[in-house]
Image (cartoon, rainbow, N blue to C red; front, side):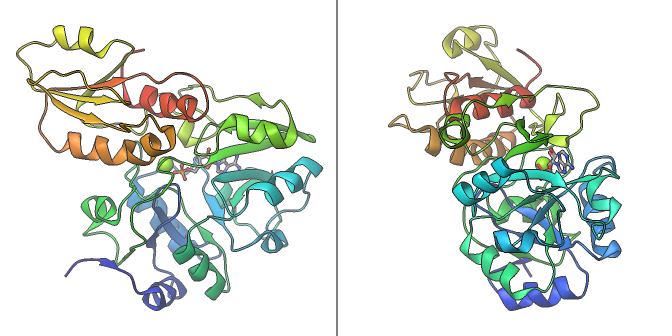
Amino acid sequence: MSIISKDIQKAVALLTEENVVAIPTETVYGLAGNIFSEKAIKSIFSTKKRPFFNPLIVHIPSIESLDGIVTHIPEKAKVLAKAFWPGAMTLVLKKHKNIPDLITAGKDTVAVRVPNHPVTLELLKQLPFPLAAPSANPFGSISPTKAKHVANYFENDIKMVLDGGACQNGIESTIIGFEGEKPIIYRLGALALEDIEVVIGKIEVKNKKEDKPDAPGMLARHYAPKTTTFLVDDVANEITKHIGKKIGVIVFEKSTNNTNITEFILSKNGSKQEAAAKLYDTMHTLDHLNLDVIIAERFAEDGLGKSINDRLQRATFSS
Ligand code: AMP
Ligand code: MG
């Protein structure tokens, strides 16, 4: 029997019994557990094969639930939370002493957000505890944006994927931390930099590629297909370098008009929002076609283009 189900009450029961359940959000599917259950949290790490030095994001139903999770909320964090929650923005704030070290990898900060998905908001409202939920994929591989992506990864490891349809944003949340009262972007993501700056003004980005980063989403190679993947400006030119191979191509809006390749166009009408929503699903599909190479087109560096390029860069060896 499939582990995919729409039954919220079943998810409530499993989570209450300290199991992990995959949950839908507007960004990607999460692998969720009670933040106060050592058993559930350890199970999240072991299921994902995620190293313990990588902290998890805590999911809460509303701003009010920050009480008991964090101790200090900088003024700009309050403004951001009011502007963007529920939504694809994670805030890293000083943690309350009740938050287990396992969640925060021993740090004195905790990452928290209110996800914008009706099914998971309903689930969170019914539970008497918040949920820790990193993305529901094995560590380093492509994040899931559909229930079946999660089932493909974890059919034999978890009891349930709560089905909430395809994720509308399709890439991970934007993570914002604070140095004193000053906000810093730690990870580019589904909420565009420009939209954040409209609300709080110019913001510094520390979205570095590192070998041993603070945050797992910052690893140099992450979100990666098994198929060798190239990120280029000129797709047609890159194709000529791989003649005789089975080639998959991901382009933004314009076809290469090459009939010898498998091509996916992310948004025929040039919407970066639509492109982001389809990106991981397209990578999952291409990765299951036994191709020799995947060639992806680099986006213009504005709006969500920046976040999409960030994920594509981490999926590739080039660039
Ligand atoms: P994932 O949900 O799998 O994308 O991973 C959770 C993300 O949360 C990681 O990429 C980290 O960047 C971030 N994170 C969680 N806790 C913290 C923290 N205390 N400080 C900085 N980043 C954090
Ligand atoms: Mg992840």
